[in-house]
Amino acid sequence: MFNCTLCYLENDRQEYLMLHRVKKKNDINHDKWIGVGGKFEKDESPEDCLLREVWEETGLTLTDYRIRAVVTFVFQGHETEYMYLYTATGWTGELHECDEGDLKWVPKSRVQALPIWEGDKVFFRLIDDPDCPFFSLKLEYAGDKLVRAVLDGKDLPL
Image (cartoon, rainbow, N blue to C red):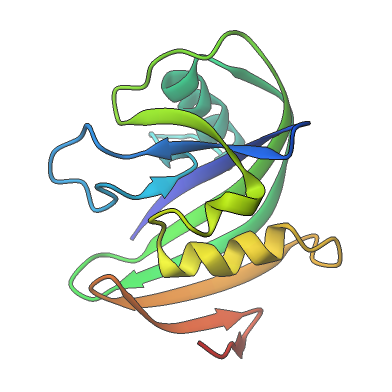
């Protein structure tokens, strides 16, 4: 198993900063749109990883962010992944080119229409829900197909 972070930066125009993963070879996320983040390095906390990965991929230094969830990914034939999901509304610096894909501000209302993972649609609904400040979500996949979603220990209908 491994740990990683993922962050969705939100601007005041109601957009998320999305990364279209098109530049890395052998990328499980190839051609998907996701947030920014990545795997923990030795001795990093979730926040250490978050800040480092966001800076490496965007050139931005987060100044206002919060953890929203722990998401467990189970992919048949792959190791289990624990992802610490964050949103951020404050940062400094200038956006730069990312070597993993193309960064683009996308209106929140259009995110669901992008090629995103099925499970991402579940957590986007949850992070946009003001009554859901923090959650634990388990997503089980067979290939690209979401076969089970469990929110705070309870199965969700698919």
